[in-house]
Image 1 (cartoon, helix red, strand yellow):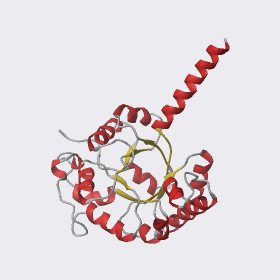
Image 2 (cartoon, one colour; image 1 turned 30 degrees about the horizontal axis):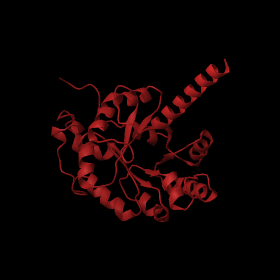
Image 3 (cartoon, helix red, strand yellow; image 1 turned 90 degrees about the vertical axis):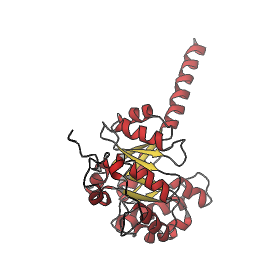
Image 4 (cartoon, helix red, strand yellow; image 1 turned 180 degrees about the horizontal axis):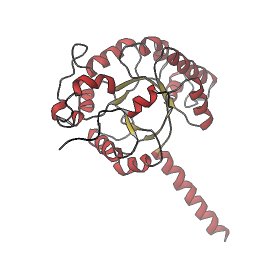
Length: 264
């Protein structure tokens, strides 16, 4: 049977290259149903948080399959870098991968070594037997994957900020993701991402990475913050998370019910 859809085509990457800001939402709950609900909200990318959420490779595959009919691209943050985990996720067809707490250009070089085929790297070839190459039906996977995948080192510490230029300048990365919350904690400001020092660092990082010609993405907790990041050159922004949506909706619904009943 002929495949009519190009499953290797990375719409998220192509839109970023075209200068189209990509809007996303984060998912912590390992549920295909939650992913499908979020995918119908007109987002461009789903930030699947495999670092903090209770995800594993199977739940992430279920999520990727659930949102495949929609114009939404999964972007997965893995717990940490390693040759095994990168090989598994790439061979499973997850082409957009965020690696947390990257702090040097040397780390990024190692990550790209694990994520790349020879001669640059040591990734073993199994795409003809796995979902990545649609079980052998994508015959030109080896020739195309470098142009379709996005490996995204995440800067979220003072040391990472100090080595920002080196991290962002490693050839072949798809972009850089900035983590304002861990950055605030590492700078000694707790969860206050609006502390002047954190704001200054974030704004400098977005502008500098953009100047280097590298896509940069981050998290915005308010519309105003997101607008500012976009003005500075951010290419992809996530706002909100499924667990917070549930908490807020549950609290608001219960408060409204209690208010109506107790005032009667």
